[in-house]
Image (cartoon, rainbow, N blue to C red; front, side):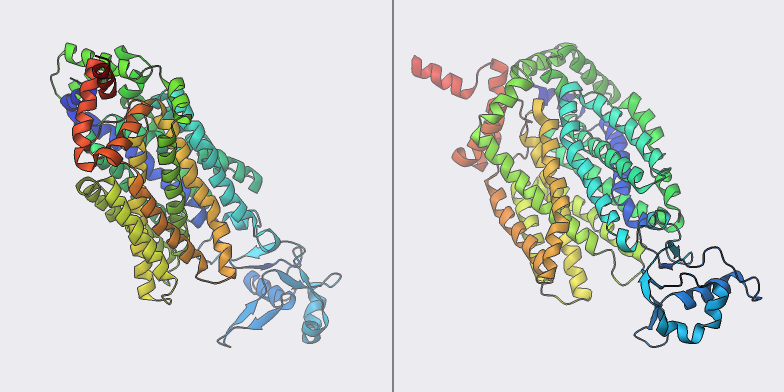
Length: 574
């Protein structure tokens, strides 16, 4: 009996796996809150130049609010609004009142508007306290006018943290174990997340967000790997989508919290502190991946994990069966990570698969982020519009779990990517209104479904010794898509619909390329590079209908110690 059969015997998706997936899901819930935190924390409130900071209106017998309004009227240039009923004041300019006191300005009010020079703000800004966002990073650090670009830089720095953290966490997970990497990422997320709420400067804020991003990315990456490695093949896609559904709920949770927690420092602490009890529970419950233990030739520890799963699921499996399966699977892993890395670099087939998948993930990430960051303002309450963009992901992940199993990874992904790309192309020619909103939400639905399939598909194509590292570098392509998004959006200066039309066309192209990637539905997770190559050979030479048969044959080969090609060579020699 092979490892896959034993894993089914101890419980395909029993109580133990459900508890572990629940803990992994709660970490995904808070990850999305951290990723989109800046959308609510760095909103630019109404502001104007601060003038006569040290002067008051004590001799004028007016209230403090009336005094501030008087200063504003005397020192800030204004124009009539479009409705001609209100006045719009300049936010980054003021009259040059150097050497002119407030009392003098009141006396000169009639001719001041026309005679004073207009200059940039010289003494900071006054931010409105009655705006929809009473507390903002922008207000705290005065990041307006000439410094308005800093928040865009801060968001790029955050994505850069993920770009670096993704491959590093994947590498550490393959070297030191899934469990250790997961817990370390949790610990540092708590430390940097809490420290972020005490940021005293924008530089400190960016450095902490950079570090936080890397460890948050590590949590998500390792959580997906652990989730897929402790369940049976028929449950892998379901588990992956359970985790991503938590991500969608995190979207909505952030909007709810931001609605009632107006102070960004408190909001940051609130979305970080729950990590503490989750970390404690994870320390005692989340196991090391038995597949990783076998890849590191630690069969004894893998047996202990399988026995723990069996006991928790109330399944009775003999010690000899578990020990025999672990021994066979340990032998099948060969020399471990080093030889797998060498084989990967010398395997054109696998490199072609990975380049194809990386391109698809990068394109889909650009589509995802462009739609996410351009549909948060739908002419309704901004909190409600943000909830809508997250809510559409829930049915998308459910659809992924259904169609990914019924149609297979390849065809479900092709349909989702193709429809998502066509929706983006349609958006370019649909005027603002309800139909453009429908097209945007449909595109978001399809792209969310496609990304979920791609991550599960990539995990199922990567050999166990390289799974976390492979997923880490795969995540780099996703983060690269996020980094490229602002660059693509610059193309709107050439033609307004050009960015969305371009990424829609790329999505259609990527969907066609993905038809060349082998199907993994129902297949055992590959243990070596040769297993991945065999999947490709089965699809291109033998055909899809025989994939499962060949898969079972490969499992039998592992138990006998020979592959089908080895037996064929021996027959030819005889």
